[in-house]
Amino acid sequence: MDMEARAHSEHPDALRLWLRLLTCTQLVEKQVRSQLRERFDTTLPRFDLMAQLERAPDGLKMNELSRRMMVTGGNVTGITDQLVAEGLVARVDVAGDRRAYRVCLTAKGRKLFDEMACQHERWIVEAFSALSEKDVATLHKLLGRVKDHARLRAEAAV
Image 1 (cartoon, rainbow, N blue to C red):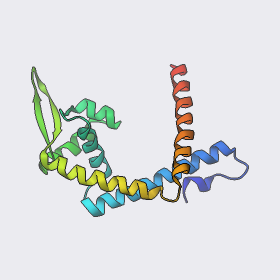
Image 2 (tube, rainbow, N blue to C red; image 1 turned 90 degrees about the vertical axis):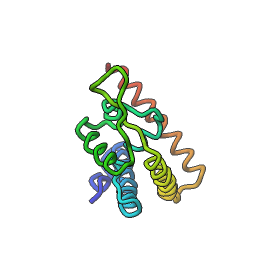
Image 3 (cartoon, rainbow, N blue to C red; image 1 turned 30 degrees about the vertical axis):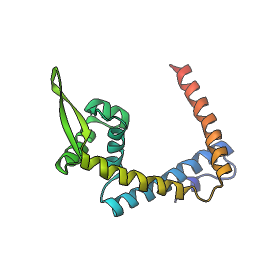
């Protein structure tokens, strides 16, 4: 049973919408995870880590990777160790800090990530192919309003 199936007609529309969004997210993510595993023998967390590094050509320190991925340092270390062993990322010393290093994509890692990113984009486009371009633009705009409202509420709570 998916998240949305838990809602009933007597629940507020906003709650039912929230559950539909969660369900859609989970279904698309499940498909992406499956495709990454089948096509590239990799996982979504590994793809996510490489995506962060692709956006930072000079590399990132481990704590920055952890913050950006919103996971613990231990999770990032484990994934990084695997990617280093496969020659997809490298650890580079940070000048002036013997304890720190930056993680960077290697040429091999960048090439593989580029392939994965192209496929990932196709999978996401396919996931939304039931919607017209106008539908996608409208949904994007509406969700942007929800996002802005949530951010304002979060900032006001601080």
